[in-house]
Length: 113
Image (cartoon, rainbow, N blue to C red):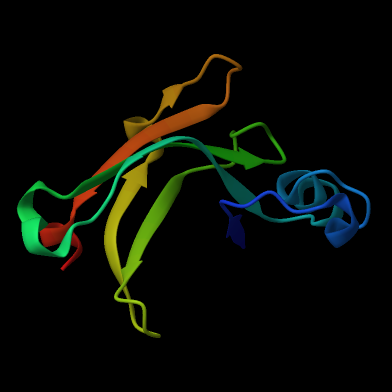
């Protein structure tokens, strides 16, 4: 099970925990969360090839990233269909400043198709 979110929620929504990541790591035995470190770009429909979205993500798990073998990246057209776009393996990640694995990802609107 993996969670990912880009919003900050009030602690009331997660039983007093400040962040979804804190809640997940304390309340679940199995699972991971992806933290967005940076995000840039946007998609422009009429300039698909030059519309690139990128992010630096940091997996969090019960062993400080030690359980993370890979991250599957799915894309959706806004409907219910998701397509596996890419798998990022642990060997493609690097250690961030606090020792957790990080990955830099990017995709153009053309690739997202």
